[in-house]
Image 1 (spheres, rainbow, N blue to C red):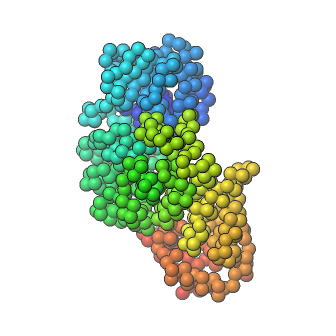
Image 2: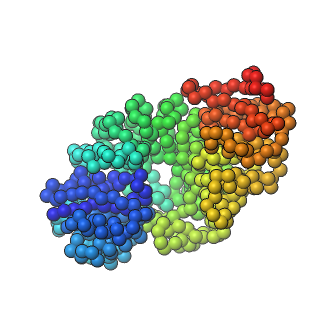
Image 3: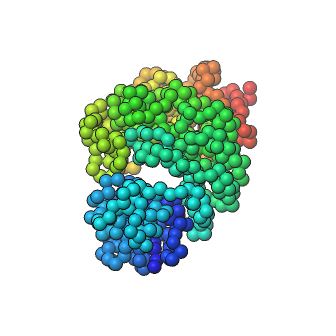
Length: 548
């Protein structure tokens, strides 16, 4: 019998590790292949391709981002060949699954499917975590023995992936489960942390030196849950001879000093960190059962950011007891930490989470369709949530991609209300009739900043020119051509240095900074980044071009 394991990934660059674990755990009595598609593919075409491969059974992996397309895919496949058995699994169908049983499927594997899926294929009578129209397991969620998984072929280095892996992410796990119980998060429902053996993890990591990939993304919910083990893994990774980076999700307020010191002095291009902050409102954090030391968290974000570590930090809008003013304060505090990227998200009430079950207690109004986004709360109106969405858009387009980061950092240090600035720019982006071009983002930000009086507008223009120049290999015409007195330029830079607006990390972050001061139509290069040194050097030039 032939089995096709398939899923609709969000993008081509993503790969589905769950399918690969099913593949290496396969029953040798079946002929098994993996077919991966994306949610952008035409669903009828996908159905035709799958059916053309003449499977007897299809295993379909379903997530919040592909559930609607997956439903259509099931229907199309059934129309083409109703004899094909379809077995589904994944986070989106593990909870509140009843409606899925109305589709032409044989059943649902809830939990980890490396054993249960193949039991279902063999039509065994007792299957952990399996449900169908006629059967429901007494054990709701299947779990597998990680020691047994270690005896299987490694899912990270399959022959089928060799040709395309260099252009895709490689997903890697050293553990399953999460030690925390945040009520908005699906991972909190598996509160037992299980670890792959250290020997197994180290062996597979070393094998990564033999391949190419876009990036290695660790799926561990908390990489540093076992500090000594995590540090040993990180030390190994830094020594590896590879040209790609590794991304971890870490709990930064519990990170031990030895690990903080290690990352401070490590190869900054080798590691990328995801840090869930979510809110700086302690009442909010308590309500969602999230316990963190905010002072220590803030200190450690600033510490690693100042050292040049690449950090992606998260905020969630719409959590209990956080109104717009509170979220504004959370955003401003996180902006002050200087992280590489700030992810602003709107709360989504995921199936199975405690917070979804408590929705009526908080008078949450949320969408019935995935991704189940909040539309209104006791503390945030629909208009408030639109403002947060605007802040998200502006943060992505202006800050996270680095386009106008220098200007924004400087304006924040001068006292500009950064949340309000981002909200106003985001509103302009939303109302823009066409897809904005690069220069449009600069113009929109200039229009907003010009409404404040913290600095002369020509200074703002100079900063915007600086960011604009840095986008291009060859210096373009300036967006703004204000004339600035040379003595003003000298005194301004002297003040910036004295106030530590420019430091080694600023230079490290921005590389070669070409300042947009158009003095007598001549742009003077004031700061130079030496890319041949581990840390930036600082060289000063006077306005005649003579080095000082």
